[in-house]
Length: 315
Image (cartoon, rainbow, N blue to C red; front, side, top):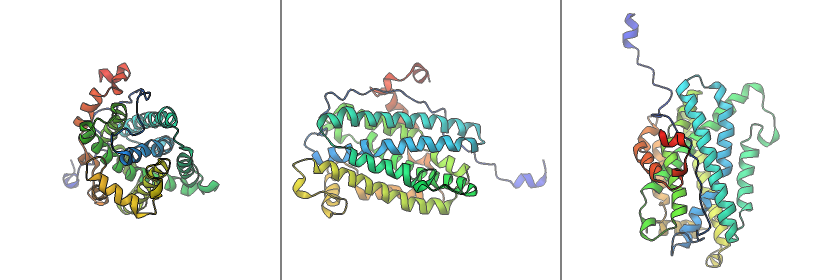
């Protein structure tokens, strides 16, 4: 051993994920789920239902982008993490897509206005060829890493929301629909389980702190805005809210979000904003943002996850 090697710090593993991620097959029966799935809470019900419209396009985009990133991954464990992440995210997208087709459409909810906007965001602005413009060869990997930084920021948000969904017992106390609760908690538990993958991949491909900082400053407000804008569209279709003229640009919906959150049916916007702050720290590590044990405990008891393939049950 050379003298200089004594002072070298051991290289941090590329993967912060313990164990092997498991892609789980799930099925949901939406035939008995009411549109107001939280009894007596139409605002909160619409607000959470917007998640079904917001996520599928983004999650399929995650999958496409991660498949493009795989050839650059040189660490075997991280490579497996990314592959399993893709399979989990694809199932998330299909599950929420099923909720759109079999649940929201069954209640006569118009969703295309929302999903068309998300499709445009990911297929035009954040596409491999943004706005149809082919990038110079030397910019292709930089554009890839830029978008991976956006995913890392979004995955921090979904981990926070996933933990909230698992921990929130107010919904159970008022008799919220068990099928939609299971969708939220199954998805949330897997977000907690794979919370390190996006950040690990971003760093592995050269993403640094300054770019992570400004990408989060862009991504997080955009996600909040899209969520509120989409929820407003759902509320406009409800006679109880039409006179409020819900809009992301009107104070009412933000004030109502805060008011309803105080009853425990929604995460407070102020609480959510505070929970995003750790991502801006140079010492941020997603390992500290949730409990893998708690996530796996829920996944073992989830009615939908119980239908996982035999390999998942044996793991």
